Image (tube, each protein chain N blue to C red):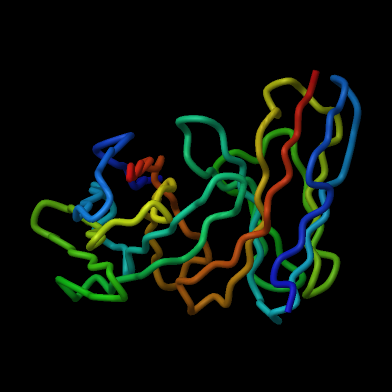
Length: 112
Length: 112
């Protein structure tokens, strides 16, 4: 049982480049989330998908797009990376009625 | 929207001591309050939650206390061990909404 799997684990981008962060969960959860974590800022919600076929903005959505490809997969895309997007990105999933969210190992992204 | 916050950014204790990590919240409508633990290089991991109509809940070596009068949440760890060294986040959840809102985190350092 892999839980939540994120790829890649590390990435360095140049300003203006694009990339997609991948996330997959094998727990049949309806809800999936993308957070970013910056020093002293805690976890901030970028986008979420309450269920397959729906996506909504979180606290810090600017500069990002998401796709809920199917129930298992939820990807995060940076169309034109900026240094301010240097962060650690976490994907998470849970059942909507359950407080326990399961997190991936994170993607450490550096934009130079 | 309203957010969950923490009083102390870093807590240093000796092995065997009891640790208390505090959190202030502002959203009185939250149905659950949750504690997560994040070890270095890993994603956050669920520890324990407490429903808003409860004052206390105990788990294995951990106790969560909720004081709704002053909007205060605490996590008590008994007989703290070096393996408890991590960042601890409080989070809130409101039924009917899909999101978990996290505080900024407290780092717990346990020395032998």
